[in-house]
Image 1 (cartoon, rainbow, N blue to C red):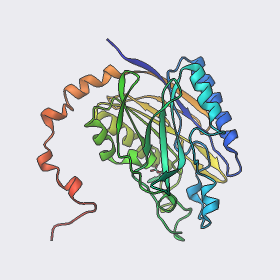
Image 2 (spheres, protein in one colour):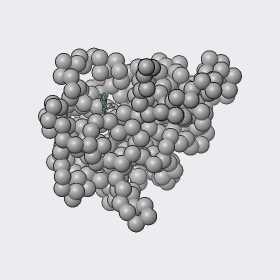
Image 3 (tube, helix red, strand yellow):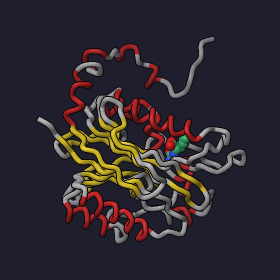
Length: 312
Ligand code: ING
């Protein structure tokens, strides 16, 4: 028996500060049209798909910041995307900056949602690992103020039974932390859907080679897939946004850790792969049969402490 899903990774090219939500959604719909033509059942869009990567700017006016956030989802700008996906019967994920009202207060999250083929939001994830810094840093070539604009997500790494499988989500920097995949792996995840916006250069080490950043991107998602016997779909927003380049490298990764599809450009680009969820089983039942092989009694430090404690 096989459980094949034709997955479309909808990499987005750059969004400029001046680009409207409607312009972003129009490009997303074109990628959805292409995915439909290619027979995709599920399409993954990047992190912060509706706007430019605004944490590169230092803003103190909350109204200016909030202009990059969505107060409702779907909303007028994104409804056409939901409508077209429902018309096609395609499930999809995408990331956006979310203002959530909880207990009468407004919270700001870096969020992604999972939408089923009928257009219902069946899952929501809020980014856990916020990279960068909370205050303007003059020593950086450019800013990365995610800790200023977003709160740490309050969803944790959940999974959902969906499309005859078990699906999870994470966002960008989350993909660099093994805990992300393991928490989902311990829930039986068979496909992790994630988007990213990653600067092509290191704001703290301008000498860092571009191919090294690509290497770090690839090993993060390949290791996560292999070590948890899961597919990983990792999709970029890429290209030059107001003079700042974001890397590409969107990829669909097999539970073996092999990349089966990868983007070639820094623009709107659809990558497609037939992903058989049954391919996870061998890895989950042999090398990474957690129940047989894991020894949690020796892993305590992972949850007992945050930073490094060195021996005297
Ligand atoms: N972006 C980057 C990412 O984790 C980063 C930040 C880049 C951190 C390179 C460390 C090294 O891919 C986001 N949005 O998390």
